[in-house]
Image (tube, rainbow, N blue to C red):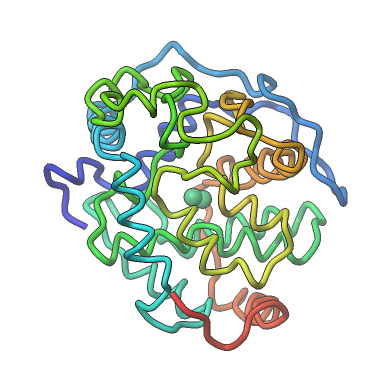
Length: 296
Ligand code: FE
Ligand code: FE
C-alpha cells in the first residue's frame, strides 16, 4: 500500500503504535483462567501528555470526516453478502500477508506474525482453544486493504454512527467536519437508536472488526464474536462511552473484549514467529471450528 492523500499511514501498524502511546501497558497481567478478567476501565491509565504523530492525526481526521451512517450502509451492502471469494482461514492469513506497505520491513513484522504473537500469548496464558483461535484470526478483516479500501475504512478506533459522536473518541473535534453532525436526528445521545437497545442494533463505523464478524459469525462462540467485532472499539472498552446504548449482554461480553485487548495490544514485539513450525498446531485448531473454505 502506497502512502498517499487517502492513506497517510506508512503502515497500518502506525495506528496500533498510537494506541500504545494512548494506553501504555499496565504492569498487571492476567494468569490462566476460564473467564475474562475483571479489569476495569482506568486500570491501564490513559496517556494525555504526548501528541500523535502527524500521519496518525491525518488518519484520524480522514476517519472522522468520512465515516458517516450512509458510508457505512454502503460498505455493508458492498461486503456483507460475502461474495468476494471463497478461502480457507489459513488462505486468508497468507492473503493478508501479501499486504505490503511503505514502512520499513525490518521494523514492522509481517501481518501473519502479529496474528501468531497474539494467539501464542493467549495459548501460553492457558486459555481455551476457541480463544487461541480468536487471537489467530482477529485481524483477518484487514484484507479489506487489499480490495483498495482506504486505511481510514479498515483500521482506527470504531464508534457508533447515527447518534452523537462521543467526545471520548480520540481527536473527537475532527467530527465537526463529518456531514452527520448537520443531521439533527443523529445529534442526540441516542440518535436513531433506543435507550439500551444493545450494540447488535447499533451501526458501527466501518472497518476490519465488523467485516470479519460477519465472515465468522456462524462458527465461533459469543465471547469470541464479541472480541472480533469490538476489539477496536476503544471508546467503549477503554473509555466507557455509549453506556446508554449497551444492554446487559453487551456489558457482560465486553469483559471478554477488555480481556482480549491485553493480548492484542501488548504482544507486539520484535521477536519473530516460526510460522512453519507453528503451522500444524494452528491448522488443526482451525479445522476444529471451520470448514475447509468459507465465504469472504
Ligand atoms: Fe485489529
Ligand atoms: Fe490486532
